[in-house]
Length: 166
Image (cartoon, rainbow, N blue to C red; front, side, top):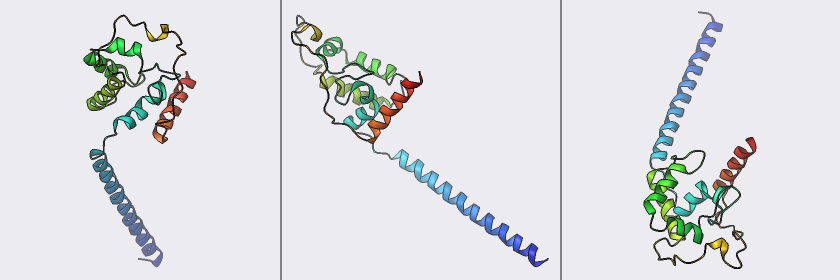
């Protein structure tokens, strides 16, 4: 065996050895990623809302460019006493482009959050006029910037890109 052949063989073994190492490292990282995903800490209600809903419905449910207010007398009158229907509606139609993508638990959390924001368990005067018919109604109020973070900004940018592509 010539010196040249021997050096080529050693180089191939070294490459094979290093690509084997690369493969082992990649497999380990994959397993770590799978393990981390399996043990991921669930988002709290506000973070879940910010990530999944605020890009359309506003940071504090006040409504936005792409979705109506989730916190109003009209909304409360529509859904009062209908928690199961509200959960079904949210879980089968939200988010609009990918409904059903969240877990049942996440949909339940979001439904409870919206129900609590509207005090859906409180009694309401059935003779009260709809919100838009009240004297002095000026429309949705601008929202304070409560839930602005990288996740909500990314979701808003993705939504804007989808709409721009239409």
